[in-house]
Image (tube, rainbow, N blue to C red; front, side, top):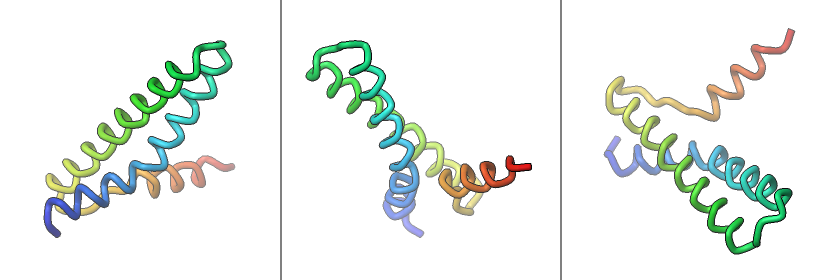
Length: 84
């Protein structure tokens, strides 16, 4: 698999977490009665930072081990295993 395709897959895998981080930032900032412009910029910055961080970790892990690593699958499996 080429590097650009692995980066695309890593970014798509990290996308749900980036969206959740942006939504959480937006909700908490709006609850603090912040201005909408500041809230939007802050939510976008947090979302991009999470996307880049998790995508980079996933892509580096793929490059080091040679096998894919999916955050979404790991989170779902850990969540299901945590049920008694």
